[in-house]
Length: 319
Image (cartoon, rainbow, N blue to C red; front, side, top):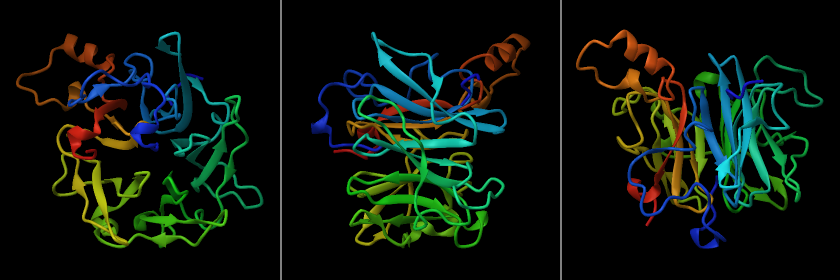
């Protein structure tokens, strides 16, 4: 199969510089692993292992006819050719997110849940563990506190084990909202809907990425009046037990194209996200030529998703 297909620990815990790192501040967006991970195909949702030497990401078979999770590793000074992850490739698997300790990955999938009647395209949150040797185990669904009879489309984990996730449990896909489930005594407690403007109807989002310390979360509302395009990435900050009104991450991240699928690097330095920016979203000052059209369609910036990174400090998300 052609591979069309984080949560962060405190910066001080990084044992050595990760291969995605760059010298000095990265104040402008940069394509990640251009030509290897970011290609002319449709990639989204890159998440990294604790040491930064393994990246998982989703690839979409146009147009979203299949989602596959792919994996690449950094060795001998370069990223390997991505391969379909051993636990993926059969079902719609997407949006992997490493847990803060790097031992597990949360992801969404429509694969059948053992002991439950299969529902067409019912997405649930699954977890797969990584062994000490680096192999992947058998995925299992998270419990009923998180998964419901409606769709769950994205999940991420805080440092204390609390899972934040998007669910349609309150009325189908038109009623998506952000919930959390706290880990107590090794078990996940009842789903709690987040309070505050973050769950206003105008902020509905398919994704929610929680910072490890739960000081802020990132979400991707669609079509807001103050948005730059279609899907844009916003930040909401914790205010006691409530969450503030989401604020756009600004023009370095959000464009006329779809900008979505945010992740935080394990060393706490970078935002990684997906953007469909490219030659077709640039403001035209003249008619495009035949040669420019062919060149644009075959380029990495052809309008499919690519992975970008930028320093969190450039966005006001790090001190």
